[in-house]
Image 1 (tube, helix red, strand yellow):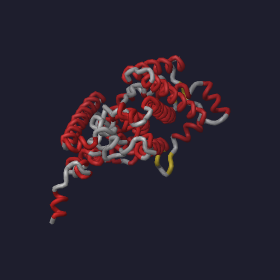
Image 2: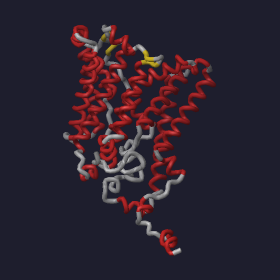
Image 3: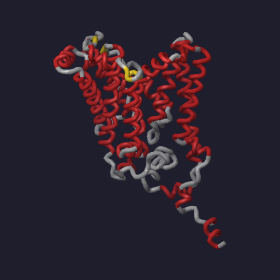
Image 4: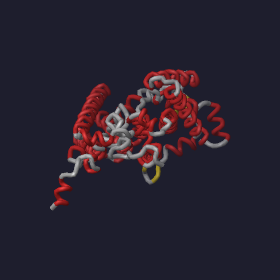
Amino acid sequence: MTSTTTRSSEPAGGASAARPPRTRQSVMAGPVGRNLGLVVALVLLCIAGVVTAGDRFADIDNVLTILRLASVIGVVSIGMTFVIIGGGIDLSVGALVALSSVWATTLATQQMAEDTHWIVMVFTALVVGSVAGLVNGVVIAYGKLVAFIATLAMLAAARGLAEIIANRRTQIVQDRDFVRFFSGDVLGIPTLVIVFALVSIAGWVLLNRTTFGRRTFAVGGNAEAARLAGIRVQRHTVLLYVLSGFTCGIAAVLLMARTTTGSSTHGTLYELDAIAAVVIGGTLLIGGRGTIVGTVLGVLIFTTLGNVFTLNDLSSSAQAVARGVIIVAAVLLQQRLVTGSATMRTPRSMSATSGGPAGATSGGSAVPGGPAGDGPGGDPTAP
C-alpha cells in the first residue's frame, strides 16, 4: 500500500514527469501523423484523378510519367530538406541545375567524354554543383551573410554564368551512351526513378542514422546550443550547402538525360518548387525538424496535382493558384501542430530538459524529430 501510494505520488521531476505520456494529439503532431496525413492527401488526389480523368490517369504509363517528372525536382528537394532542417535556405538550386547542365554539355566536356567515358559528364555536373554549394556555404558560414541574400546572389550569378558559357544557346547532348543509359529502365522502372529512390534512401539514412543527421537537427534547432555542445556549426553549415549543390548536380544529370540538352533555362523556378515540396512535407522553415519521407510525399503530391490538372485541360494558372492554397494550408497546419505540441509540455517537463541543447532549443525537445524529440534526436555529438 505504501509502495503504491509512493509510486502514485511520485514527484513530477522524475524521469516519467520529464516525458509526459503520449496522447493521440501528440502522435498526430509527430512525424508519423504528418506523413500519414500526406499519404491520405495523395490518395485523395489520386481518387480525384481517377474520377475526373478515368483510365488516362490510372494508366501505368501515366504513373511512370508522374514519377519521371518527380525525379528531378525530388532530388533537388532532398538537398533542400537538409539545408532547411539546418536552419538555412537555398534559393540558388534552380540556377545551379542550369549551370551544371551547361558546363557538363560544353564541347570540351563532351569531347573528353567521347575520348574516355560519358561518366566525365556526370562527374563534371556533380563537381560544378558541389563547388557552387561550397561557395554558398563559405559565404554564409564564415562571411556571416544571410542565407537568403547569399543564395539569391548565387542564383543571379550562376544563371548569368550559364548564359555566358552556353552563349544563350541550347547545347545538345551528343553522347548516345549517356542518353541510352539514363533513359532506359530496370524491370520496367525508369532509371530516373531509380536514381530518385536511391537518393531518397541515402538521404534518409544520412539524416536519421548518422552523426551528421543528428548534428543537422541540432544546428537547425539552436545553433548556439549546438556550438556549446561541441559541434562545429560553421563547418557543418558549409557541408549542408555542399550537399545541396551536389544534389543539384545529380538533378542536372537527370535533366540532361530527359531533355538530351544542357541549357541556361533549365531549373527555372526549381527553388520555389523544392521549398514548397519541403514545406508540404512537414519540414519547419525555421529549422530543427523535418523528414525525408515527408519531402518525397510532398514532391509526389505536387507532381500528381499538376498531372491531374493537365489531364483535365486546366490552365497552368489554375494549377498555380491551387499550389498556393496548398502551401498556405500546409504552413497553417504546421503552426497549429507546433503550437499544440508546445502547449502540451508542462512547466516541470520543460525545466527538466533545460540546460542541454534540446532544452535551450526553441521548440527543442517538444518538437518531434528535433535534436531531442521523438525523432532522431539524442546527443548530437554521439557517434
